Image (cartoon, rainbow, N blue to C red; front, side, top):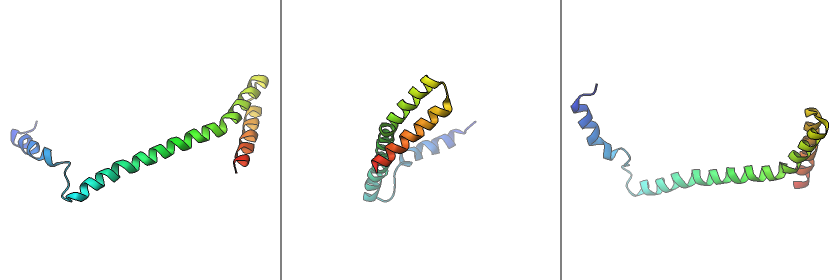
Length: 91
């Protein structure tokens, strides 16, 4: 499989795999590299929750229309009308 020499060379290099030769910049890069995806993730979550809150009345109206009529077409039309009204009202 792997020779003992190859395993030994890998184990010698293992502690240095995550280290950078940039010195003080590597700490800053680690902070930025962790903070940027965190901020983007939080922003995406906030936008998705906000969109869900805006579209909740449209979903409920569409659900009621579907229960009353059994028609997906009418439920979709009612969803789109209420969603458009919600978005126009938001602007």
